[in-house]
Image: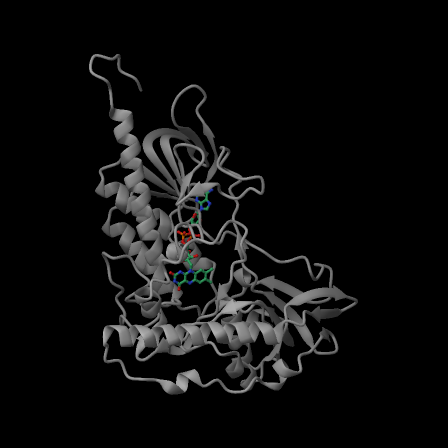
Length: 421
Ligand SMILES: Cc1cc2nc3c(=O)[nH]c(=O)nc-3n(C[C@H](O)[C@H](O)[C@H](O)COP(=O)(O)OP(=O)(O)OC[C@H]3O[C@@H](n4cnc5c(N)ncnc54)[C@H](O)[C@@H]3O)c2cc1C
């Protein structure tokens, strides 16, 4: 067991921790990054086998290093892990891997914090919690664990072979849900997909990927919705070279679309009557982006090839116009449920005054209500892009600047006054 002191303790060695280390290093601020597993562990072991990045390599990266693959390709999860590992080495990030922080508390009567770790204590003036936007899988309490159906969260999904023989109900139609449903269908499974509210931007339009459109249209900068406001998931995919998620295609491939899963009783699951509305809202979101893109092309006199056919949507499939109100799981041969229903965070180790009554981080752009404690990598921390690889880098820069400002106040001594800490 060791006892160390540093100025900034960064907890978490994923992309957020690495970005923070780069900015602190550039300012010459002494710091340590503590990671309980390995650098970029979640990209190594918490993603399904076939996962590729949702954004192309030229975009989903830090500014100072390019991926080794084709810039327009979608890197595999292993390529992302290798990229982040290479980045950490390139900036010589002071990362201690295999060390878990079990608690952080304020030092009574003196500045700073004490972290208790699996390998001793670390005293630090500032603490940055960079433990991830997606830490704990959320499964809504709809189907009891004792129900005679195999249930897993998308976090634990690896491939079709892992699931028992039989049909699968995938619940949640964000990027994870649609990709997993598609993969299961391609493997020959009978698949039902419960579709909730979603946005579904075109994968590409007029020769440019949607990440470019969201950039030039300032949509990555979209303001953080107020606390508690409904978060609308984005259904995009880089799988198979990247294609627009259109639920009509999934239905054509044999996936039965159903509404949000609402209740369960005696082996029967009931769906909300919201499927048509959710599909229509997703379509409206898709079409409005095309229109905004067209206006941008016109406004700037760009010579991008027109794509009028992208505006023409096919009629809704039968499963949408005449949706199933419910499903007897055994009768329909559904042996598994995959819950692609998102994540929450767990900061039980961070014992400071930085949380609201529901345990959510209380912060503004990552600066928490506990002076000296910061969050990094939260969804919508400062903008839509905050939890993505490229976005977290900019939030880390903001926090490092803020730490420099705090340092300058600390360094100030009125002429002739006795020195303070
Ligand atoms: C399925 C999926 C696909 C995604 N695809 C993309 C994509 O294509 N492009 C993109 O930009 N973003 C993508 N994201 C979003 C985001 O980039 C990832 O979630 C990313 O892993 C977040 O990085 P992070 O560093 O903030 O957190 P994490 O990667 O979660 O890293 C946090 C680290 O903290 C460590 N840790 C946690 N608690 C402790 C503790 N107490 N002590 C020490 N260490 C601790 C963990 O082991 C972990 O390594 C995806 C997310 C998911 C879930």
